[in-house]
Length: 205
Length: 205
Image 1 (tube, rainbow over the protein chains, first blue to last red):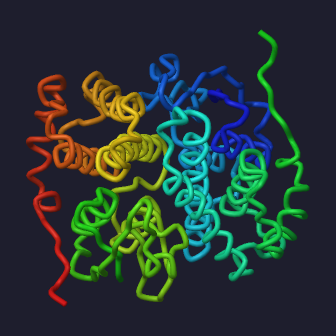
Image 2 (image 1 turned 45 degrees about the vertical axis):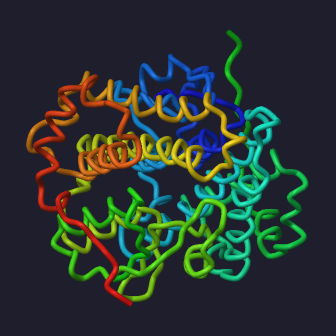
């Protein structure tokens, strides 16, 4: 299995964390990429016309994307239970994943506003509204402790952890720990999981 | 069942088209919304902290989002086969859905650039790169006729149809039919399905 890799893509990280949880990390080869929101990577486009990471290639040569599809595939390959197979637990895990993906979508747009867009063309209200998705979402997690119950390990909680990792990486001044102590306490413990402590890098060329 | 409704959201439309295909349309009540990328809708946020449509409420009061989760739930409620239950057909349908969702993500960002962002702050290269995702994706569909094979009705093809509807709605000058005749021929036929001919509106207050 192969995946187009970018060290700072939270969606790539989500896939690799998922693979690690399932014991599949060693079977996933990292491929170099230059995904960029404006200068599009033609090597990725040749496999995935959206030109985005993560893009994944199975051992049979089938191309899968995006991170949700890849994670579900990995869960099946590893006979995992990170995506419950049905019923309320499945909708709960998938909706929590969607919440965390939504935090990331907003955070990435705020990041592009900060570093990709020419300075004269930046729109502070847009950036603020994108980051406010993280604010209201973390308030929701803080108010619903069952969502981050101790011992809950599924695609929802793993994606929340990836979202918090990305907020820390790109928005160190966001200061979410002070406002959402219960979420911070959960992350302090949950982020000790080996899958979240692992780091990945391309092998030398 | 209830869904926060916006007549021009392609993701809401995708959910309603899916419900129609499954014979569930009459059971889904439309709720008014004012989703906006900058001025966030607090009524939606009370249910879904991302503040986005579609947001869905089951008959048991469980809140589900986003469109992928809602469509999978509807498929289960309707005992449908719009999401194949496993194997290669499932990965194929889910990846085609991700392709079409990716076209829409880019098209929505281009749309926000055109109408939401103050004119002086617009970045033509960003807008072009977002719409280029549609260009390369339609080229991919044109080059892989099996993806839009006659008679194929699943969450992938339905989402492609919603993406093409949105391109026509917001970017009438995009001119994709001239460049991608096979995709145009497919859409001409596929869009005759009652689910895609249906239209939805909120009942009078």
